[in-house]
Image 1 (cartoon, rainbow, N blue to C red):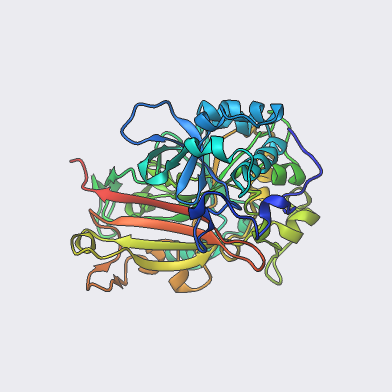
Image 2 (cartoon, helix red, strand yellow; image 1 turned 60 degrees about the vertical axis):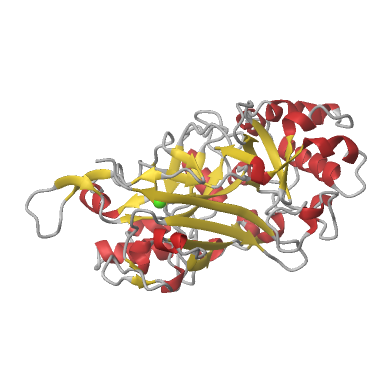
Length: 446
Ligand code: CA
């Protein structure tokens, strides 16, 4: 694993709030993709059979790295980093570690900055994002979903176990389960309402059919960088340096299937039918200006030493706003925009940090690999209206929420589109965004 002396929260020339790009749309205040962001996605021109390549978001454009690689002005080290990206292979770049990730960011920032010597050559490597289609950013070998959202865990725990909402291990172990990588899909891919086995509370026997309690879960997805060799756990410092970046993640969940199947081994088919990811992978370096101290609530135990470090206490958390919106089929037909259901935050929702998730995951010697994906778990805020799932907003399906057009929801109906957005703002820094993650529920295939 590659490590260097730069810390995750170091700021450098790429974070300079006065930096402007020669791509004018990147300089519009309030956008997701100013030159201080530079997220990566796997993409190609829509409607073509182009080979997938990695691109970098800049304003409403993307720099196509298959084209950009051919320009003059890159150093030999930069050419080594660009080679796999031009071929659409983000995993191979992830395997190069943190120093490559930081080096590429510096090179891209310099190349896209106003006054860049590469401006004339790179102009032809820009593609409007509106003309692109996206794939998952990389090949995901394994997907693990954590349960770090303590407000979510507490309110869901109350619904399932009123006497003991949080089990005693919650404050000591970052709880997680192994998810299904094959049904990960990029934002904009729709899916059919899943079928499954459920048992109504008053029924003697279960039945099989379309889920009646389909839900979303507002999460962030963490991509692993170089990973760790089998049998060699990551230290907290290695874990902090290694995580590559973040996307939005919707862990679509069938609550009736989940309630019937989850004991004794946890969720299985209630989660494995679809999981949506936003296309732009925002690196941890882009998030450096938005880091916060990681603290435990008064009276809670401190993490064990292998999940603790001074750097994690000082700046282990990430300050991101997280928004959920819903557009029903009726709203779409009437030309109404998606309606906000909740607005919360990452740092206030998560009981464990990203570094703790990687350190815990590898603590038994389990090898994490480049491009592995870790879900944070549902990130609900402390207030009821900040809940990151309908299960919570509708209080277990008992209290429907009302929409502005007069419709109500306890769980999702066919035609519903759920849209997540996330962004970061801080004093002295330029706002950046993660873009959006959306998916629409199609009728069950019966
Ligand atoms: Ca989840």
